Length: 173
Image 1 (cartoon, helix red, strand yellow):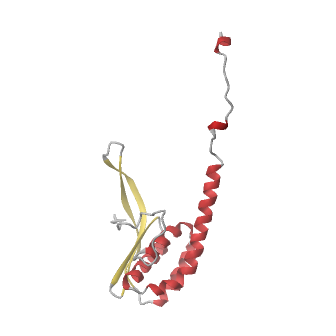
Image 2 (tube, helix red, strand yellow; image 1 turned 90 degrees about the horizontal axis):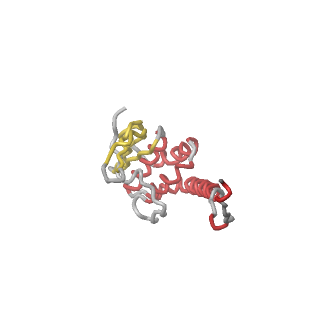
Image 3 (cartoon, one colour; image 1 turned 90 degrees about the vertical axis):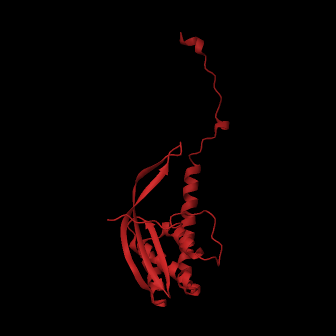
């Protein structure tokens, strides 16, 4: 496997919802929701979108490695290690769409690339074909996030409710 260049912004997930109508907003929503998607759900979305436009696959989905560089507490960068990613490139009406995701997920990379190409070509209405499944994925992700928050809250320590005890060290000898 060869090293791949990560596309700027493809790995960044913001907690704020993307602005509707902004270029790339649908791709951001999809990227955030894909964490809850099964392979079958992604394949179904791809099957709905693919026949609607004359897509041309520029780079078939492939797996590769990306070096993760982080900074230590002193600001010195160092290479933490490599991360497995899948990437794909699709062309539509002269616009190239690129998709990259962590892991061996070729269908996810292809779907992201197709969505990016659709958004870039100005055919945003085509994305309505996968809007309903995307909404379901977003709801599924929100439910998982709420459950994880509840589980984490159950482990919270409330120090102010702990009984104060006094120890008599004089009795120890």
